[in-house]
Image (cartoon, rainbow, N blue to C red):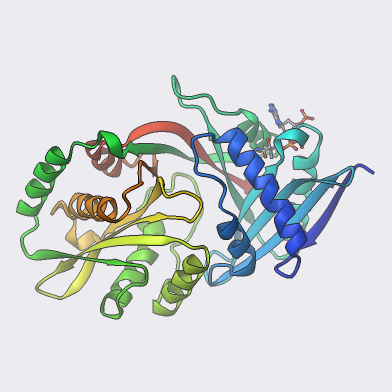
Length: 339
Ligand SMILES: CC(C)(COP(=O)(O)OP(=O)(O)OC[C@H]1O[C@@H](n2cnc3c(N)ncnc32)[C@H](O)[C@@H]1OP(=O)(O)O)[C@@H](O)C(=O)NCCC(=O)NCCS
């Protein structure tokens, strides 16, 4: 029978379940310190894509058995030359051409949609760090993709947090942040902050170091922000937010988010942190991060680990994270392939 490839969509629950099981097996084998692969998140990713994104799903079988899947993300509102790919082969079926077959199928789909480049992420070991498979980097290089951005995942072990030291750091930050107050919320953004948060969200891809990645700033308005919030709600995410308000103008000028999913209450992701360029140098990034950390710890008593990613070259954010106690775990590479 060999390798067969077929698209699937939101109506095909059996295929969603088969793809989920492939993702779960790969997650457990490749990233043993990750939380369990979240079924709700995966199902919602098929059924409830992020606004402004066309998602194309493909399942590969090897001799009739589900062996790999490909998820292509085609932005519709910006980045219309670009695509993002997630390609996963079950650990039990690797090195038998499934990855290559999915990749070639993906290239045909992307060309048919007029895309010019595709981006995908792989994990590898840091020098002296925990072991990680070499397959991802070897595979990406074999497809002709180029490494475009080096990232590092860092983890905070919350059991080892020095809360007194954090309070001292926060007090120092507050002394530099006169004229600003912090606000916080869980879940959806309060209406009064929504326009500013959408603006900050859209700035991320303009402000974070992207290396050689060709990715345009995203056009985020309140409608898209609300759509993202609904999509995150469908994934069962619990979000904890802190923002800094510039008192003279009433605008939100800094924002950070930590979120957790339903598959593990011991694990969270430190997501976006961004300070508007006109308001940098007041330690607002450090301040909102520390306050948010305390906020999530107050509400999530089982939380033990928080993971975050930074571009290796993003010295400023890395320095903040190291101060908070985040330590390097593994290396992540964004690969870019020109079609
Ligand atoms: C990377 C991954 C998709 C490869 O899937 P696969 O079905 O094993 O890949 P293929 O058998 O089609 O291999 C294609 C080529 O990639 C390279 N390759 C794949 N795995 C490799 C490994 N472990 N070591 C060295 N080269 C490897 C080889 O050049 C291989 O060709 P060859 O077997 O003729 O030498 C799979 O290991 C995986 O799911 N890893 C976790 C997720 C991931 O990293 N995805 C990649 C995103 S770009």
